[in-house]
Image 1 (tube, rainbow, N blue to C red):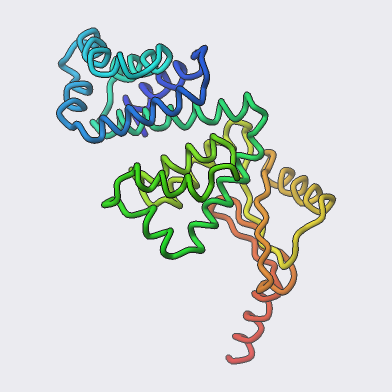
Image 2: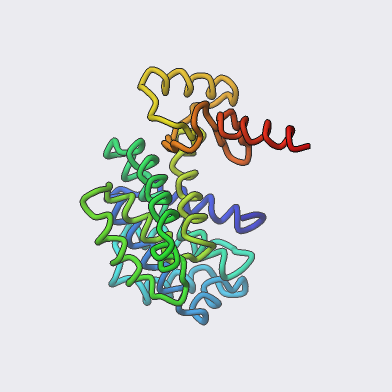
Length: 266
C-alpha cells in the first residue's frame, strides 16, 4: 500500500495500538466489518469518496455498524473512514491489516507469539499437503463462513485462538490464495518482534542446541533475530536447506547428488 493509502493505514494501526479493550475481540470485529464492506460496494464508495466530509463518513459508519461493534472497533473504523484511500479496496485491505495487527497484539499479550508463528506455518503446511482441503479453502466461490467452520473442526483445541482467527480470515482469500495470505500474516507476526522467518528443511528433527546455533548464525548473517520453522523431510537424505524470504540456501545431500548426476550426464 502506497501514497495516501499508506498514510491512512498508519493512522488506522495507531488506533489499534491505542485500543484499551481485548485485542482479540477487536480483531474479530474488524474482520466482520471487512466482510460486510466487501459485500457492500455502494457503502465502500461513499466511505472512500474524497468529496464527502470526514464527519459525514464517520456518522454513516456509526449508523451502519454502531450497534454491532465495540467502542474500540468503532474508533478504528472512524480512523479508517476519516482517512484518504487511493481505492475502495484499500479501505477494506487496511481494515483487514488492522484486524491482523489486533490478533497479533492479543497473542503477544498472552505470551503466545512464538506459538502463533509456528502454528501459522504448520497450518499452511497441512493445507498445502491436502489437495482437497487446499482447493476448498482457496475457492472464492465457497462462502467464507463455511470455510471457517471447516477449519474450526480441524484446528479448534489444537491451536491458539489467534491462529484460528487468522487462518479463518486467510480462507476468505481476499488478496490471494490461502497459503499466500497466511504467509503474509506470518510475516506480520514476525515483524512485531522485528525478526525474520526461516524455513529449514532437514532429514531429521534438530536438537535444541542445533536450532540455537542455526538461529544465531542466521541472525548474524541477516542482522536480525530469526524464527525457525523446521520441516522434517527424509527425502533430503542429509544436510540442510534454509529459505529466508526469496533467498534459498540448499545444502541438502539430495540436491548435491542431483547436481552430480546432471554433471555426469553431460
